[in-house]
Image 1 (cartoon, helix red, strand yellow):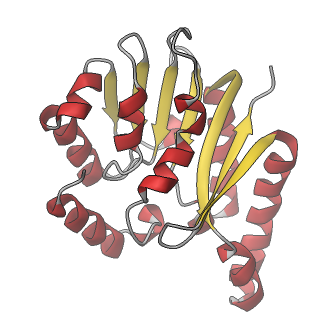
Image 2 (cartoon, one colour):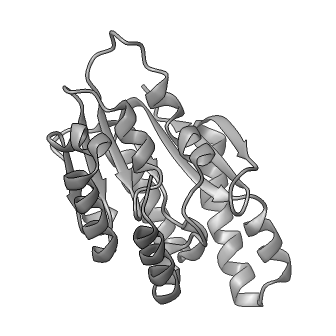
Length: 216
């Protein structure tokens, strides 16, 4: 479990960097379990996998991912916020559950658009606050998701329930325009690739987790 100091770090970064932090509180364990649904479901005798977490923050979802990382797996984390990256690295050093996955894990501090990998990933798990971003950036992020995802791999990400649709109705004109463009991008990918949506009510605020599968 994250310490009180890590929660304090999260809320401090939320106040200072709302646009890139996005969440108003660390993700609940119910949300974390949903984000790891496909990773958790793999058979005991399955081949090793590659896992990429994007925007892990202080590690609320990472805490669940490391439970399911096996010795031959690879786990990369891409976090833009250097303060959060420091928290993650400390947790890999100090927390027993995280330590078991430390040897095959690495935290990278850079935008996901700039991240390059030698091989694609079987699971991409993203906590990026897409609703906060310009539509052009969101389009680039989706391109990065699928560039990094292996054929047949699964992308899982969350957004807060109905937030975008409400803001499209009550926001200022420029905000409504941005959100409609963003919605077009997101809905296009959902129509083409979604395999499941989970409704997570025990979260602050309640969230959806979208699961998209890359073509084989």
